[in-house]
Amino acid sequence: MIATGIDGRSRGNLDAGVSLGYDIRQYLPLDRGVAELAGPSLSSWCRSWMGKDYAPPLEPIEWFTKGHKPGIHLWAPPPAAALIALKQLARSRQKRPHFVQHVFVCQRLLWQEEWRRRFEKEMDLWFIFHPGPAWSNNLLEPLVVGISFPMLNMEHGPWLVRQQREEMVEAGRTLCEMSKSRNLQVGDYLRQLWACPWRLPKV
Image (cartoon, rainbow, N blue to C red; front, top):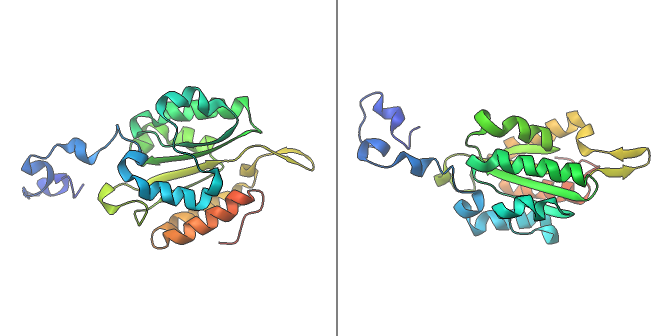
């Protein structure tokens, strides 16, 4: 609101943002994914905790093909297409619950209006990732990061990580708070969780 000048315009302050003639669309990149916006810094952050499992984000055409195949997939859709990507992610999980693992990252735009409910339904763990070394303050809105783990074959049958509901909610809340000042520790925690999802590491 401050950067666009809308906040100040209501009080007669006409020296920022749209009041100077800037296009408001530059502050709302609904058509660009986080990989395009953040570039190598975000890729390096994902690689730091995904390790050898890291792969470049799926291209939109791959949401309907490669994203449905067994493996580990990184989804980084533009906010305007987040709901479409999540629907394809859900189909992938339904087809191959034991053989797909998904990481979903998207800027928090159209979050409440369009895709929040579907996102929370599909992710085992999710949190808000605040601006820092991996995600510039110039990009204004934070990231929403979610991980969907495959169904695990445990001693008593198939098991989902999200069944540890209270633990997962608390872990997501802690990661959100941690990301405000200690982005490196977020990566350390995610690295441990990624390696062994059925045992939540100590935060």
